[in-house]
Image 1: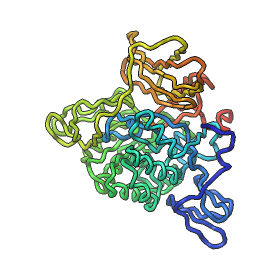
Image 2: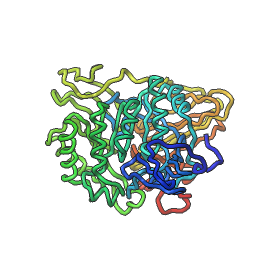
Image 3: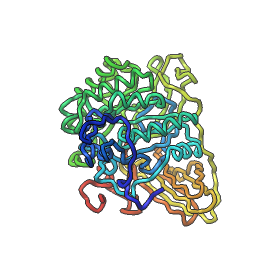
Image 4: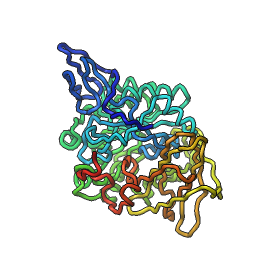
Length: 480
């Protein structure tokens, strides 16, 4: 729930502190090892020195919890199609010039209206109530949310839930060791294999990320690597060779790698989206070098998001956008046709929602949204202000005039819920949302899988800028 108190006003004790003389503390969460005098904040903007102790300003402070799919997190080889509860926070240990989530990753831009407050119990209960088996710690970056992620992921594990950690992984070995017991997956965003690039573009350093990635791999947890290919900077053959070489020498050939399409954002809007042929070429090079599972991300209508058997060529998992369907794998993650290991960890059939061809229309309103340009996903947010559980339905509209079945979402009293709707078929033109009259609701356009939108369609109208998503950096009306 939201609150009138500013998110910056409260704090609690942080972990991984070193107490130094004269009231100074050092933070050992990220490789920066920020040394802070009384009242000072770290680079991340959400860790500080208060009375000679290291504190965290963002414990339990989050962007809106959002139901998505595991493919949203550049994870293709762990329970394909799994529904996840995505949890993001505020602040970041990096400041990438192209950040897709700058409005929440950079603490100085965070608006109180975009901050929601959760306890670890709240997060776990949301997942259990909606029959979601996995919590994803994601968006701006979970590293700076360390204490809350540690506490909530351990509780989730106790309740039988799985945990996914999606991160740029600018983190210390000590912090990783505190996460490993409760994490099932590390999805690591490796920006480049170039020290100068990290220094200039991310404001971080490369070597600690590489060491942290190797550390996580040695923990035995499931690992996938993604590389955001920036137009005319890293969308080249040299980048793909270096990424593949790192994985082959330090991880293993079966670790999935995703070459991901960039969209202009934040301080890097004077450019264009990554040309798709460059992503495809990056994939070809990595496969030629010996990687077994390489994907192209943030691209629709391509065969390079599917999982195909490297032995007999059989189709194993089909994907369209953020949706997946397992068609050729057995319960052990092997090809049904030839028995070859596809290195996919299966967790049984994911729970599905109740579906209906027709729904009651009395007292209901229906909203429509059309896919356009690169906006092929939508966050639907609804607040149940009634005293009883309400039903919200979502379906897809096809270009022949037909529809899919309505999928049901139950919202308990006072619950605010956000879920993603991603284009699922080539002939799909948009979606419809049916909900009881009078319920507060809004729609948020989503560009790519890592983008968390903070500006609703109802605030600004449907955006027709298919290059950079809202909010646009530099437009004060959309900042604070």
